[in-house]
Length: 328
Image (cartoon, rainbow, N blue to C red; front, side, top):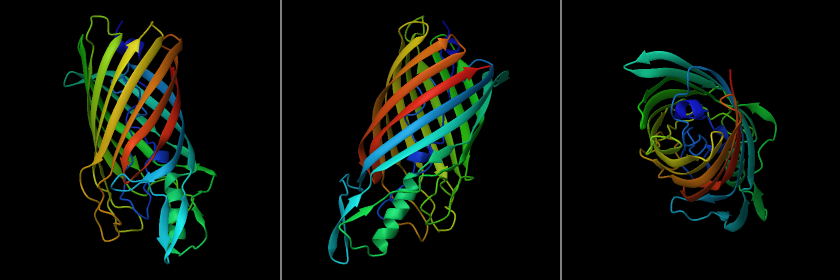
């Protein structure tokens, strides 16, 4: 059983716009790429063909942690302590179109994909709304961060370079892509869905199959992201490095279980005259997945649950992703 045939890759480097926003009043910038959404084996190029993947994602958080990892419950305005209500619930749909070929480049098979995004609510909108109320000197007993709930277009992710080398016990892949800021964004608006800047990311992934039957797979992926200036302000978000690891086990030809974890760290400071905090953010997550081929090698359904921990200068919450794949 070849892994590339039994576990068609869904998508990597996801434009998970609903998760990648900072709390403007205290935090630095966080970039576009958010870990823990792609499945354990998803960084390998799928067999040649066309694929449609739809990610249906839900994120929830009621916690923001400062650079020391402490939960922010109150803020002082005009000498008064005000309670913060930062409950955030965001829905996102990510339709994804994958093209995998038989073409070889330096011995590696070539593929590419494009992924628009659509969201209802935005963590950034909540952050900017909350920041605006704080900076205006709100004096009530609490401040609520509830962004506009209408649907809108988020940023677009395109991955034009995706290469995969395959051996009996190992897959090695590398990829490069760009996030285009086409999503709805106005500096200071409460209904933003896009981030307002370009991001470029690069990754290297290795998958090891310890047995002759690749039903068991161990995966490790390193991702580096760099960004341009944000529209409307003099801020350039710092670069981020992400490491994702996981183990996948097929219990049958159709049923897969997986466990995974990740860490993400800011490795360069935010820059620009309007940078609120130079940034020293980090985020860890652990989770599991259950996946099943309802029609073998044709129609695939996967569910993931991720819980976040040890956040610094970031929101900390949990999210679930229901993924549908159809292979043409």
